[in-house]
Image (cartoon, rainbow, N blue to C red; front, side, top):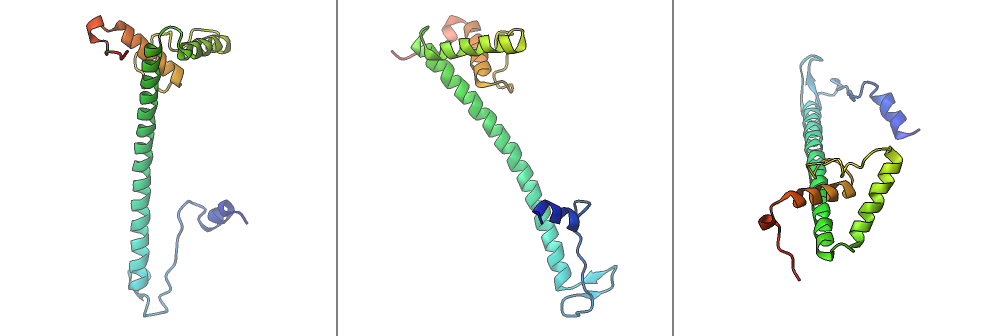
Length: 150
């Protein structure tokens, strides 16, 4: 039996329900509507831990997504700077040109980078992000361009 099948058999609504045997007074006391005791305390603690874990995982997924976006932005900026330092014969320029012609063939229109994408952090591919950064950099006044090393 697969785990997915087992999970759907045990928790068809997505919530695993458990019962507490009130027949053992050492582990549980009280009534079915108001149980108390060690077993009940453990069940409540497990439920609280599960909720806390799910909340933590959700926030970590958001943080990971933001980190991946930032890493993508940094990679695009590094590639743009490398291309600027290497000049017009940069292999990065050749890759961007090849990517642009591939996009024109596959989409039948203009590439996203040529459409004036203003925000490099939008979910485009690396080539789109580099083009957006290049477009943005070309619009800066000459005094604002970062200095390049020789």
